[in-house]
Length: 135
Image 1 (cartoon, rainbow, N blue to C red):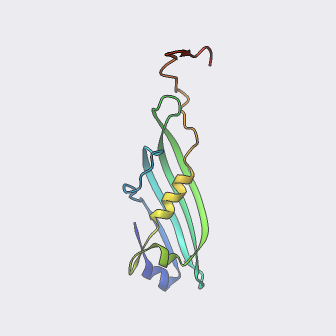
Image 2: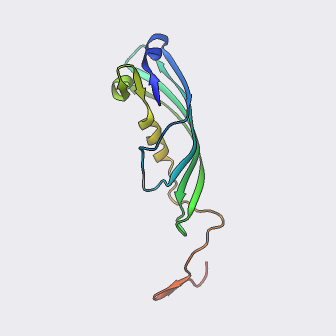
Image 3: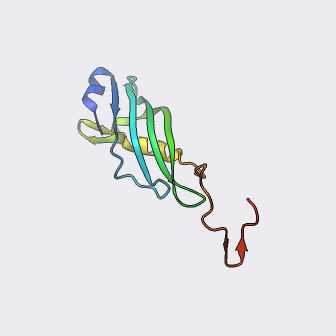
C-alpha cells in the first residue's frame, strides 16, 4: 500500500486503514497470513522525526512443532515509534511512502517460538532405536 506523502506534508498527519499485500514478503517460519489489516497514522512533528503508530491485526499460520501441521495464531500488534527521516527511508516514489517493511518487521517479531494446537499428537511414537514411553 502506497501512502500519499503530499497529504502528510500539507496536513502534517496521515491516517490510514488498509489491507496490506504481503505476497512479496516470505519467511520459512510463516506459512501464511490471513485477514491482515493495518490501521494507524503518521504525524509530522515539524522536526526530522515522524511519529508512526500502527495496529496490525489478522491471523498468522505457522508450522506445528509437534507434527508439522498448520497452527493458526491471532496477530494483534500495537506499534508506536519515532522514526528519523521517515520519508527519506521509506519513499517509494516522489509522492508515496511504502511502510510494508515496518509492518513486516513487526510481524516477524511476533512469530511464536513453538507453535502447537491443543489437538496435536505425535505422528510417530517409535522409530529405529527409540520409542516414547510416556508423555
